[in-house]
Image (spheres, helix red, strand yellow):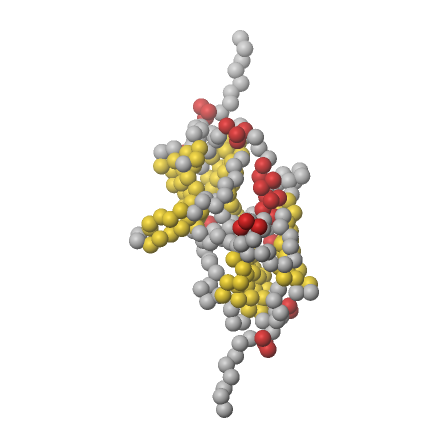
Length: 139
Length: 125
């Protein structure tokens, strides 16, 4: 059990530091898995594949849709935006973030779709038709 | 203001093992009360449970979605456990006036101070 108010909590303003650390990772390549003593990048992401598409999932708690940008350029997917931890208080509080992911070959860039719900961004990156697995009939 | 690292714990829940992590949260205090912001990405309004047992505030967040089982992981950095946060209210608040709101995966709890705990100006006679 943690007490709501603790002696060190009379100081405030550390949320921004935490957010900067959380949101600050930017690397156009996948980070080495388990490298850097297991340290994970600051803006974490998951990446999955199924038969039809790749799926990127990112945690963006508190980020509104209008403050989020997703771009795809030269097979690099970039998610960036701004986060204001205290809506209504604009004074120097906004934290900028971005995360880039290098995409595998075969993504149909024109078909990418994005959904932001409850602080989770789900990007669906469909595969080109010719890259989808298919079964070949034996004649 | 407090931030916390992941703290996975296994809890038996009707025979089923459910995993929880402690969410990142912060507490702001002002003259009228306290505002707690709890970061629980993936949790919608109906996935939040808040209970007050005496002075112990317990917050649970259940995720709406998880990655589909048919998806093959390529890169996994996220922790998909549900959330649980227990706080001892070592301050006097007006229990019946606690309110909560969930927006974009952030729970904001407002705990007004009990009237007798509010600051008062004392006149010097």
